[in-house]
Every structure is written in structure tokens, then in C-alpha cells.
Length: 379
Image 1 (cartoon, rainbow, N blue to C red):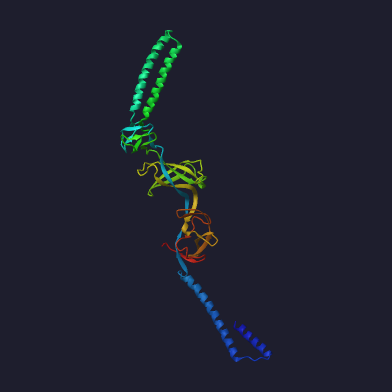
Image 2: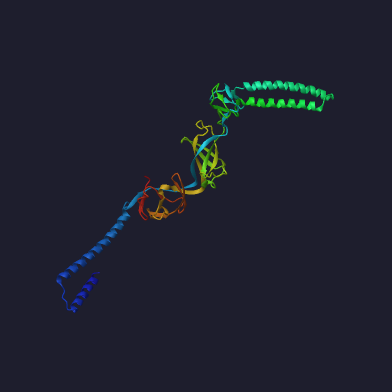
């Protein structure tokens, strides 16, 4: 290097002399000083680089960032969506009056358990009773006349017309009696099924008309939940899919879809699903509001990570930082592009780009870059 510089200076001086110029002593001194300093700086840079390399080999803490790592989870991954549903019962009925009349007797109390066919409320039926008694008298007479006419007819006495008139009169009155008895029976309100009397509406002596509410009767033995589900899930659900029923945000019941509706509601673009309740949880009542977590997707051999370690670059591509071996005991960061799938409850499925045994940087992933040297800690 020195020889090269001396030759360069000599050639420059010779060129100047050949041109008839004169060398400025001060300029020549400054040029020499500058060249000397450049040479010294070059030597120092080379020595510093060598020292830095030796320090890096000896001091393992230099330029190494502390991180923690996790390994991807593998196994069955289930995705759920949540909708609200209403508890229903096929045996929760409002019983109405079928005839007009005042309430004569209330035979049960609210909260009482009753059996199918048991009398609940009796309405006034005096007028019907009097009409029935009058018709019964007419029936007795018609029956007597028919019996006599029948005996005569069998003895070939009398005409056929007389026999048929007696028979028709008797049968007509019998039909009237049967109709009146049916009307009289409607003034007695009976339980249509076993259950509990939840509410009694009229008071004794109160006049009620047809279709007036009389009793609300409830049976809690076979409850179920109905919910409206968006039509986007119509091809993703099937009868038998698992469902978690959340009651009052604390009790969770397990069940399955028992029926899927075949009709899309045009008003809200939804279809109905039914979930049978297989429990006698005391807090459940008809029309109770519950939340349904319905399993719409299941992957049997999935690889998934905490969603917090999955990042995106400026183009929207997903990636994670993987801890890889840099030689010896050293570890470094590798930026690994991945293809992610569905996410649920803070977990994201990795479709491709990772193996189940790789170390994914968790804590510290926001402070490292591709190629950084790292030290893995358990803190």
C-alpha cells in the first residue's frame, strides 16, 4: 500500500514537472498527512471488526434478545358460533272457556299439580241443566211411544209410517240430548294433560265468555329450545351436531340438534333449529332466553396456535417468528410465512407453513426481526 502511494505521488510530481509547474510544499505536506491518516483508519477498522467478532464468540449475551417459545398444538379443533334461543314446551297451554256463563267453582289452586282430565273450573250451567231435563222428559215420552209402536208393528198392527214416525221422533230427541250434554260438558274446564296450574284468571262469580282465558297449565317434563340461525349456515349444520346451551351465563348444558327447519324466513333470512333439553334444571322455564353455541366446523388433525403470535405484513400475508438453530448453541429468528385458517377463542388453525414440533416465538415476538440472535427463556 505504501509503495503504491509513493509511486502515485512520484508520477503526479513528474507530471507536474513535465508541464513546467511548481509543487507547493504546504500542499504536498497536507496530502502526505491525509494519506497517512487514511491508512491508520483502515488499519483500525480492520482491527475493530476482528475484535467485535472475537467478543461475539466469547460473550453470549451480546445482541441476543430474550424470548419465550411455544410449540403448536395439534388435534381436534372445533369452531362454534353463538345464537340466542327461546325455551319451549309442547305442554304449556293457555286454556280458554268454551261456553258463556258465570264461574261457579274453582277446584284447584295456583301451583297445584293436576292430572289429565281433572276438573279445574266449573261454569254456571243451570239453564243448560233445565233444558236438558226438559229434553230428557221428551225423550222418555218418545221412547215409550216408540216401544209401543214397535210392539204393534211386530204384530202387524198399524202402518209402517206410524212406526217410522215414532222411531224418528225418538232418535231426534236423543240427538238433541246428546248435543246439549256436550254443551253442558264444555262449561266444565278440565286439564288437557298432566301439569302444574301456573295461573288462574277468573274469580268465582265472574261472568266469562267463550275464548276468555281461564287457566295457564305448564308441564316441564319435555322442554326444548328453538333458535333462528342465519341461512349462511344452512349447509354447515346437520341433525346430531353438538350444542352447548348456556343458561343465565353460568350453567352450561350439553345437547345436540334434534331438528333443522326446511323453511327460510324471508323477513330475516334465517331458518329454525330445535335442540332438546336433556335436563330438569330448575331455572329453566318456557320462554326463558338462553344462548346456544353450535358446532359448525370440526377439524380432526389440525395444527393451531394462539392468535396473538400470528402477524401480518403490509400486504396482509400471515407469518410467525420461528426460533431456529444458527450453529452450535446459538439460536436465531426466522420469519416464516404461513397460511392460516379459522380462528376461535384466541386460537388460529395453521393450514400450511409449520410443523407440529417447531418452536414459535411467543413473548418478545413484537421486538425481534428476521435474522436476530435470541436467547430462549422460560420467564
